[in-house]
Length: 118
Image (cartoon, rainbow, N blue to C red):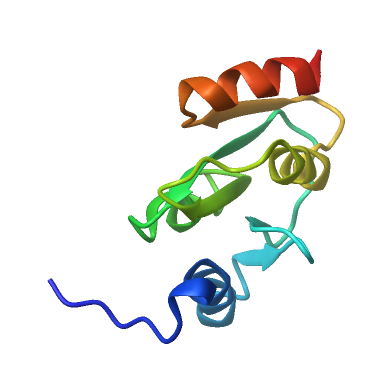
């Protein structure tokens, strides 16, 4: 399978930018972070955020929208998202009812996140 990549160092940034440009009525970007949210976030319900490493697009970002995810956080290619990115996603979608996270992480990141959110 062939892929169109302008610059390997910018692939995640360009992918997120492309999703927003293609579907601005459904998604928006959290400035400065690899996070997509619903265009009308936050909403007054328990929010659902998913994420993981990039490289299998549209992956998590493709599921952001009404009746699906409220937010998605993208790590670098084949790398888990950072705790800072995850926290920004939580803050962006939290409408006061809480946020449920479903993030694919490697074991090293799980230990780090435990310290970060404890």
